[in-house]
Amino acid sequence: MTEELQIKGTDYLKIAEQFALNGNVTEAKVFGSGNINDTYLISLDTLDNRNFILQRINHYVFPQPQLVMQNMRIFTEYADQKLKNIHLDRRWEVPRVLLTKDGFDHYTDIDGSFWRAISFIQNSQSFDTIQNIEHSKEVGYALGMFHYLMGDLSPEQFADTLPGFHITPTYLQQYEEVLPLHTNTNISEEVKYCLKFVSDRQKWANVLENAKAENKLPLRLMHGDPKINNVMFDISTKKAVSVIDLDTIKPGLIHYDIGDCLRSACNPAGEEIEDWEAVYFDTDLSQGILQGYLAVAQDFMTENDYLYIYDAIRLITFELGLRFFTDYLAGNVYFKIKYPEHNLFRALVQFKLAESIESQAQTINRIIADLQDCKIN
Ligand code: GN1
Ligand code: MG
Image 1 (cartoon, rainbow, N blue to C red):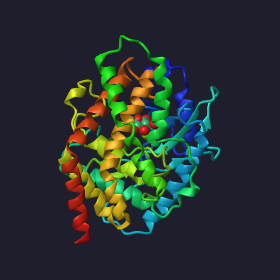
Image 2 (image 1 turned 90 degrees about the vertical axis):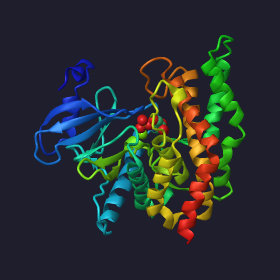
Image 3 (image 1 turned 30 degrees about the vertical axis):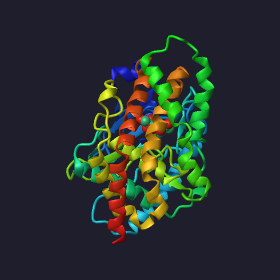
Image 4 (image 1 turned 90 degrees about the horizontal axis):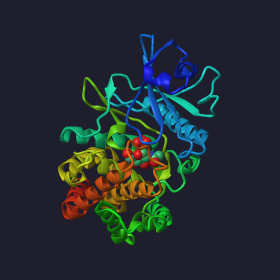
């Protein structure tokens, strides 16, 4: 056990051991850069499957974590079976939910914290920013594969574990609610920029929800958070091998996923940079991702699906900026922060990225149209 883990006063060893059915726990390390849950990499003294992921679910964000586990189990068991029945000429894995010694998919500790464990994709790594075009095609392939694997499942089987997630008009309502708390006349230039940015785009922000209501985009299943560092790459082959972080699998639009994947992966500076003015959207990377995605997904993409790709990229980027900004105004209650203005800077990064997307609308739409033409011809 590292010193840091002991100081926090939680008995990680005891918790990890609940899920360690084949071996003894030797180490627990803080892992990844998630904004919501607490994540640890657990090591065992075994030869195979030497690691697994242990997570404490954030109750504030997920008030019913048992439903998160239920969704996750339905998907992983189904996808695992589907994978066994298809012939794939490359490595692909679906993370597994690990059960406790008593056969439960979670463990509640004496403080009431909700813990769950997931298999670790061995010999793999993730990246916070994209490396090159080849990498972008692999990220796209990964999302396509994920959507393909969940394709036949009906969304109705899945619980809504996070009502309002990616419903932009709902985030706007929450924003309107916290705004009156900030009538301070001494507001910074950065805050003024954010206020104007949101107000200029308020009317358009219904675009995907309107398309859903008009049945132009059907309700499907989604990953919910397919950002670049949720795609695992095989360390030896450098190919994508899995999509992880399955907390937000639930009914939604595949456009939320397409938008989120591109907003995250086509931002070479990454979403945690303080020099937000340097942020831009790389259209070459977006072409690589969409190419990789459509190589798998073109069979289930409709004409309307293509029509809304650009809006999805722009909207999900705007939406994440809005979510960060609202959380900053609300006193940082949702996303974990390292310093008081952290969520403000994260918002500025996303708004700057959205601006870059808007200024390259023609190029992005051309890329989408060309890829669609390739499909038709
Ligand atoms: C949160 O915790 P993490 O990093 O996996 C958030 C996503 C955001 C993302 C931005 C449940 O995901 O929606 O896109 O931060 N997850 C939730 O980095 O709100
Ligand atoms: Mg996540």
